[in-house]
Amino acid sequence: MTTNGLYELRCRECGKTWGNVPRSFCEDCFSPLEVAYDYDSLKKIARRENLAGRDFNMWRYSELLPLPECYVGPNAVGGTPLVASRKLAAKWGLKNLYFKNDAVCFPSLSFKDRVVATALSAARRFHFTTVGCSSTGNLANAVAAQAAQQGFDACVFIPADLEPAKILNTAVYGARIVRINGNYDHVNRLCAQIADRFQWGLVNVNLRPYYSEGSKTHGYEIAEQLGWTLPDNVVVPMAGGSLITKIAKAFRELVTLGWVEAKPVKFFGAQATGCSPISDGVKRNLARFEPQKPNTIARSLAIGNPADGPFAIKQIRDSSGWAEDISDAEIVAAIKLLAETEGIFTETAGGVTAGVTQKLIAQGRIKPDETTVVCITGNGLKTTDAIAAEFPATEAIAPRLEAFEAYLDAQLGATAGAKA
Amino acid sequence: MPVTIEIPTAFRRFTDGAPNVDCSAATIADALNELTSRFPDLSRHVRDDQGQIRQFLNVYLNEEDIRFLGGESCSLKEGDRVLLVPSIAGGC
Image (cartoon, rainbow over all chains, first blue to last red; front, side, top):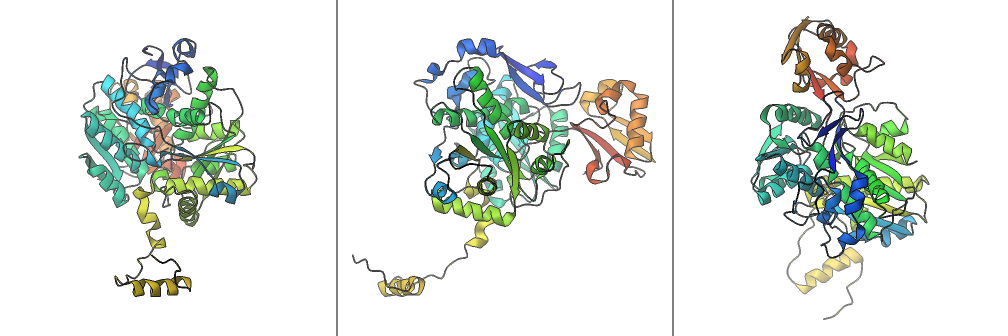
């Protein structure tokens, strides 16, 4: 069943509609555009029962996404685990703690695979042959991987000093990588000008409204995996501020469509203290956030001028949520804690989210009996540099049993009792 | 000081298609005021009802966001470029 004609671009500020075009901002007021749906019509074709028999990945929610008519998702994206926490929940004193684990999202191990999937469907619709992005790393990985899968040329723009793992994880797919001497905000500004000039499908620039809709599937899956019910709290990392607003949109849509019962959900935003314009805006109750110069190991959250910042702040305030931020040292500690307790190895953004969750619990903002979902957005293999110093190389031992016993004596103070 | 204001595509319909507008201004505020006085239709796209630069319009002086340079009162020197860029961002 097609959803063609049931959605179009609409300005988030002035409400003017623009049809379906590769454009990210309203030419009247320069505010961001968003995909707006005809929910009354959508209700007639988007039924929860339709999902039966569909594979568990993001395409099971196709009716709710701005896809071209008869579009078939070319590969399985999303459908990631919702991990019910045991050890960390016990440590934190929470009864119902979950981690939505996009660290294992296919194909490139971050939630960016979702937004790229919808963006490339739009690129196909608008007949772009070259796609690209401005990226702090994860998006470049996802664009390069999916462009390779789908036959697009790809050109990605990154800050020159991005983590080597992230650069490698993009280069391997054959994308052209352009390193920019500047921070991410400089890269972004340049990409706005490039999209203007070259008419490429830059997924987070001129395809941004379609791109950002893919984030909703992170929220749809959470609701479905909780048994078609909404959590009490969601903790979401914030860079540009898009994901937190799109998870909220997803939940609202599910209520509108009658797929879940309405209930209050508190949205908590997580940032690194070294780049916390949104968190700062929430905590100081600012009318407008103040941009910052990023200075944090959480490079994937290092956006000092977040375009969705105002919307994220509003979402947090309207939901009676909060925002917090943590130091680089706390980020590293949280990455280790999550790995050691739940076996989830997340990148620095995930460390931010887990660490902020701990802070919110200590503040009493997340209650023990509530259902809390923590959104883990990327894999730890992408930011190994950030934690490498925590694990210095150990001295090797000789390949003899006696050497190992001596090693254990030194390490544990007792010879291992187990015999073959 | 003689400076150049770079006009994004979306605004060029208000500047008779001109991609750049040269003007003489001592500060960013003066430059924007001169721009909107020469092209009055541009005015409501640059400033809101309170006279502030619109929330989703970023203004750069050469490579730097003017909010890091003291805002509109920032002084200009000969040859400076003032860029008007819509606010967009990636990340999550």
